[in-house]
Length: 318
Image (cartoon, rainbow, N blue to C red):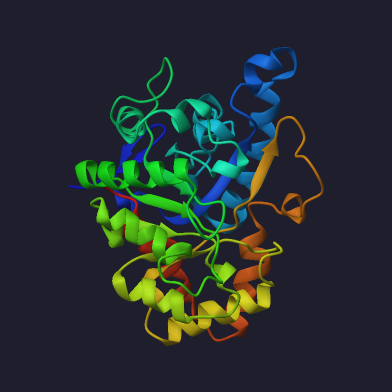
């Protein structure tokens, strides 16, 4: 039986409950815990994250969080483990890479695709750090419409790993306005599939970037890919437009391929560079702000349950 691989171990998909499918508990840079060791206060970070996520768990029934923070973006397994234990909330950690323009590590940029592949396999099967905390999802990212060289290697590696292990993949997307099908998210997922990736095991995140154009989203959903709307309160597309996009896909029969989330960034260390509307969010924002818009547009409780409970429970086990 396929199971969900959380930072505290494997669970059956029936225990996932209400799931946020694209979030960040803690963000930093890869060596911050060593460079700034005197001020790297994990107990402070854990409390702030727990207060934030705990409110969503208590008030809105959030039970599982897919944390798509990669090692190059400050992933801290110990923080995730402690928050999960403190709140009794399932947390799924990510292996993989972030986008090249944001500084994909030189080590992986210089090595062949096989090195990325084996790193992903090791972090999924053997775990990370002295406590061998295992990852349960692969995170990929694209900087612009055309994959950059190191990103292409990461996509190829992830497709091969998914073929071997069946682990789900979540993609940070860019280039939704590209008209060439070889570019943008469509081109990126085609590369994954060419390396053995399975559409029904892949979530295309930041789909609000299509900005009201449902055609590419329906094309992806028809092929089996999951479509994630995860920008509530953000600047890519207004919440009203996002709600309309969700409603359009549900009306077209693709409610079984939609996941909802926020891309919330609960804690940054050091402080997040530059102003960001993202920092005004909380883990409760989706339920407080976006779900009421969906309901106003005619989306039923049953359909919301499908998008927040049933769909993630189908995508994330392996």
